[in-house]
Image (cartoon, rainbow over all chains, first blue to last red; front, side, top):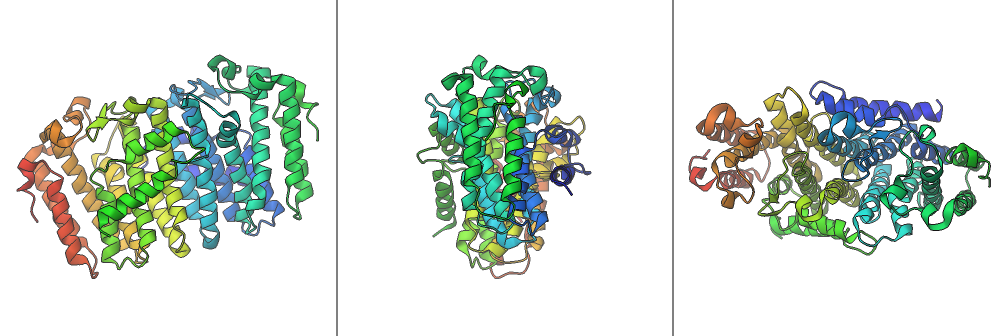
Length: 289
Length: 289
């Protein structure tokens, strides 16, 4: 089965746990709305790619880890879109969860998706000796002191360290995706942290570039939000050309950091093709490593 | 060390993980505000009491489980108090988190506390073979289809099954507290589900009774909210006297369900004394089993 099918199947199985008698039907519908149809699935693809590069000897654990990572990402989007944060009316070209289901259910949907990530890890305990490392890796990347929730909370502070903000808000979950992929395959997770962190920084740079330079139809969500909300942004700091150059360096750096493993070549190819997909089409030819 | 000290120490250690350089300081302050000073700590006390009754041969795992349960409870209070739910200005006699820190940080504080619960479980992996059961037990009690998040989501549905609503919103975490206490001590968790569920129902009945019959000073939060918001409530259904009678039956039922174990007698005494504490003083003499 290809990576996309594995990820979608693992997510369908996880979200399906809400679609049973006894679960509030609108909560189940809101969870499905938040997770499907699929976005880029960049983080679970990274998780599967690293697991594959490390041998992927326990695919059920890998799939659970990849699904957990994506569920946590989807949860963060639902909460980020809330009126008290970005107040975004659309996401992936459709109404955001709070627009479609109301603010209360949007808060609960994010909560339920966070918990579902850990339920999904717990159910993959067919390799119980891998569970502590997976649980630590994944939970740290979302929580305090430096996971995505902490990253989002930097937006509520009077003084923001831009590098720490990006690292927590985006880099942490990318690092966890790479490390969880290795841990799910029984490999040493730590050497994969730098690969994930650099890809996270590259992804954040690409996100800032898209926000500044893409059109709304291509992006599927409102553009120009960073500037409109006065949020910290790489483009605001170094300009568009500087941001593209920075992205290029980050991707090259991530590739240079890949530990020795059987699937290193395929992983390098995947990373390059993902990087090109993440910037507006008119800038994609500039991204090469 | 007594149960209270163990619980407070485990919670201090968990919340302390946010109070380090690199964590947004206002998020850390909001998390502390949500968890301290202590409330009744009913659920972690139940977790410790059951672990003690089962031998408590791995106290660090027990403490982690108890702290995780309480962190999840505190998270649910922070989100329940938000303007889109109860819009409660006070909690435990102090400003609610969103009143003190704003709505955005209140959403993030709840998220961070949910994740911190799982971080805390992950760090207690000194008994890795007990982790899968603990993770499953705890995560199911908060998530879908029938954990506290699902319970809260019933308030967003046009039709509510009162028993299912109470079971999910309150009973599930009580069941998890009892079961996690057993699992942390290496005992079979399943026989403890009924004890926890009945105590959860009793606690919910006591909560409805307090909301209807306590004064605000004794309760430390606004009273009469169920009636004011038209929420489902046992008192609205069967009256105050009927609710007290129901509570008495539930406590007796919980005690009758305690599995055979060395600490059964002490556990019985603790449950009775907790039950008396949970209703307004003028009604406490009616609660006896």
